[in-house]
Length: 295
Image (cartoon, rainbow, N blue to C red; front, side):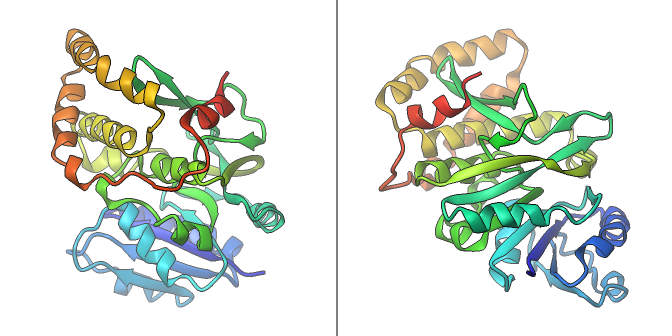
């Protein structure tokens, strides 16, 4: 069975080429789509050495989520491997994820085990509600099972369900929380996300983001998107009430901690409030979803 691989690329073409050369033997025979999201620098010359690769070049910078959406829209196969430029494959056992998806029509995505540069294993995550906010963290055990969200740069998804759910929301541009948001929307519609500890890749986390964005900007964007994700997805009345009731406390709390980016992120999020659209006709409540990840 053949699948499609979508690789979004931004600026770091050296890493793209290096890891593409490494990964190609494992991807032989599959459809490979590279989406260049850095319009000032074409990748046409570099891609000449990869005739099996389809290159899409954005005319304007779209951000991670919209670039992936564009690649998925051009994919010809039923299952799509979302693969970041900083991820290296170790073998072809990613196809085991496809077997999971084929067996369960309610399974939206399978996310992979990732080995970081420091040897840490990540990829399985939890979501939890605390002090009126939605937080995320690494799961305590990296064992196969349900996970709160699929990692946007190392997961295999059902193209049909990806498009049914509307893909990544561009409101999260340029990065962060878009995979959490899409996964949460999937959970609300009654779909599931699975983590397979046996399918492992090597990951150089934040190598692109950390190179081209300073830490304050990264934090500010992350806090902004945290608020947007909450406002988009949380609908249980008591959680909504606690969010707004505790908002003044949280703003003050982070100021006292010296984390002004939380306040700046909140202010930034307010600018997007008119563009936030809540999902309709959901099947699962927030409590039903969050209790799946209690630890």
